[in-house]
Amino acid sequence: MRVAVIGGGIGGCSAALALQRVGCIVDVYEQVPVKGEVGAGIQISPNASRLLNVYGLAQQLEAIAVRPSMTEARRWDDGRILSREQLGPAMERDFGAPYYHVHRADLLNIISGAIPQHCLHMGRRCIGLVQHDDRVEVMFEGGSTVEADVVVGADGIHSAVRRELFGAEQPRFSGNVAYRGVVPVERIADLGIERKSTNWMGPGGHFVHYFVSGGRYLNFVAVVEQAAWQRESWNDRGDVAEAQQYYEGWHPQLHAILRAVDDIYKWALFDRDPLPSWTLGRATLLGDACHPMLPYMAQGAAQAIEDGAVLAACLSSVPDLSVEDALKRYEAIRKPRASEIQALARRNAQTFHLHDGPEQQARDGRMAAHAGGRDVAAVSPARSMIFAYDAMQEQVGPAAGDVTPKRMDLWT
Image 1 (cartoon, helix red, strand yellow):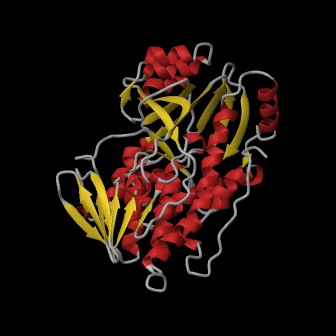
Image 2 (cartoon, helix red, strand yellow):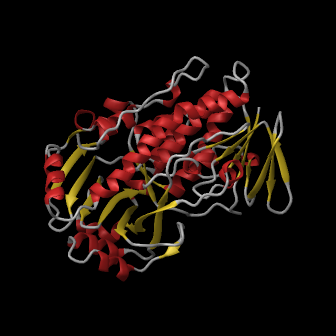
Image 3 (spheres, helix red, strand yellow):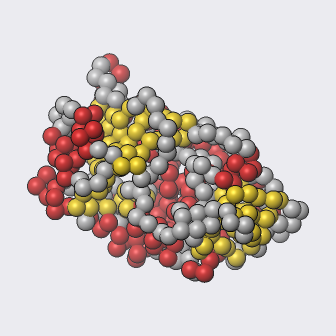
């Protein structure tokens, strides 16, 4: 089976690895002409790391990742600990795979490097699709075309494949803008920051930091509320002084981190409501193309990696299922879970940004039960549901039933 994956990011390249494992002939088409150092730190939880390990990337992951000891939430002004949950060895004990912090570019390099390089085509911008009974024709800018049995749109929130399948639709600006950057560890050595994920929560914003690239850099994402924004880009330059103004009165450690950065980028956060459908004929969507997520559950990359594993399993059921039915099966399995995690991430935007007052006090009271550093499996049904998931165990045949997810709150 020939599969054309449109989009050479983490989702598209990990899907290609999964599809090759089940015998598909896969080509990945990426619109940018060369791979670059795009993006910032991301978190890879056990539900995704277990798949990357299956793909043979465990040793390379260990070289570029950091295993955090815990995740903690702190109060914005005085640094008081609101909650702590164990990561580290508890992840492998309770969920069977590690929890990693990585730089997006480092992770993409090892995933894309595992794809035969003649199957990775750079500088190929998709501009159209034509579906036939037994194949799909893909048109690219400049006039070239390819044909495949299946097309997978893994081309992000502004997906050309989604537009071709379901029409144009603008993503929703969340009202939040992130300032992001990485700081060489030697510049912040005197701050005594440990290898853990820290989320400083305060009025109208939050500030997350953790180490990436084997501990050589501290990654930070500082999110603030803004009324309007016109662009969705990873690479708009920001201004450190502007970011510091938003965090006036916040803990001195955050200002020390901001002062230490060379380049800061400003990134507007967009998402969209769950799509009615991901699949049409012999084409389907994956990752941000169908379920873009705000970063408040740290699951964007992980869910795209899950998508690829389930898609490969479903397509491996052909010819017991037709191609069209296999793609519908993939959507039926993945859409409820991805939509629920999208909703959890949206709700966290409100939880993280509460102003001091009764709601904030109630939130802090709920979180206080976890301030001692208990295990995720013991205190967080939502994260346990996410981390325990094993995409390789999904039933993908025609008798599989749909899953109705439960609504979960993060600190219940």
